[in-house]
Length: 266
Length: 295
Image 1 (cartoon, chains in turn brown, purple):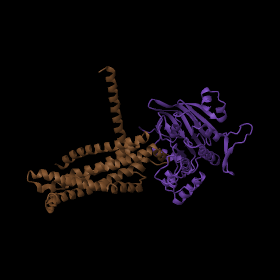
Image 2: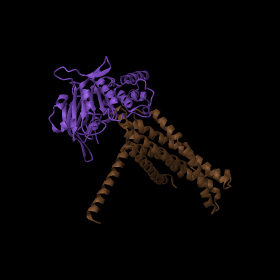
Image 3: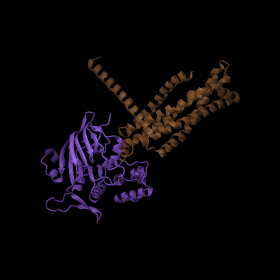
Image 4: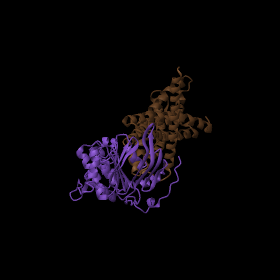
């Protein structure tokens, strides 16, 4: 390879690395600013409730549907495998543990991310390219407090409730498949599902939605607020927000699993 | 980045003073000192220095991309220069390229009204909520907000659009609502970013009439960025007549032939100031570039 081409590639790599570091730095500062703004006035309660309604109640249908069918699929797949070891009766245990510890929080977060991180990025991105964010600042309002904090607070809180609902509906879906398609006993399903759970499982399942919700909202708002380049830029920000939040949720899940296993044990 | 230590200005940030009371500035309203700004390799402003006095209307001209809108955003602290200092009402907005704390800027912005290039109205809010936005944020009594909004909308002759959304308005009406939003708190400094950009000539003259009306009835210091030479000279050569509710050419009185003495020009070219002075000086300038630009 000619020397000048090697030089070009190394310059491009250097520029890419700098951009990544700069983005991480800007995102970290953005998160810090969002968190510190929660604890000082003014706090926009009306906007927070409006966002909680949009994010929480609005996401209910997709969370109910995905939770139900994931639970059902889990029951189908695990029952087939467990049958080989003569352990079909513990299908309920597997479904409830998987849903509560892992699938409920992660899949709910991914579904909410797909719906809301994109919505936030496109809404704030449109406001950005039409100078509405600048107008807001010019009119004496901090856009972080008015636009970002309500979204971060409401997503972080509502994802918790959505995850609990997804867990419950997922177990119900697993139960319906087990009873009506696999001919398992319903009381046995619910008995094993209940008996297998202890507090550490529940704790792991209900802690995860908080960091996931924070990731969804901050990533969605960050990409929205960074939008440049007109309507094309809005589209790009929306895509980037969904991709980045989905990858970060799965990465954070891995880290959280490692930490929680270290704290609570396997 | 740490904010520089900025002198405290109790006269500006004293809470007993209502935010919408006119700010009586004794010195310069705006002062730029060696301000430079680049976007990547593109130098937008290079060591730019100028001053704007109270009551002055400064028209900012220049070819596209010479940093006219950037100038207004710098005054409002919406973007940061690479170097140089900017003072507004004597208060430092940037000192050696470093910004004043954002919370101080929000207090300062209460005295500045800005009309954005594309109106920048909040599309999810009604005209009433757009115009009354700042008053609502300040928790002003609702009846008081309604009265002030109606007054501002009547000023721009759109008193019947209170409950409409921006999407229901024409481009010219949106621009007028944007002016109403900027003047509703009776600011001491008004920044107009291409208020007639993209509008037809008749609507443009309506907007220019509002700029002149605001200048002559309220004596507000203002900066007007424009690409339309006819608008720039219309502001300098017309005066608002309150009796007939329209602007009329300033009569020729011999010395200053039909020109408003408080209307001045700032022409930007290639990152530098090509002209800073009054109307007559601009017209009579022998600078070849200016002559070509004005023609």
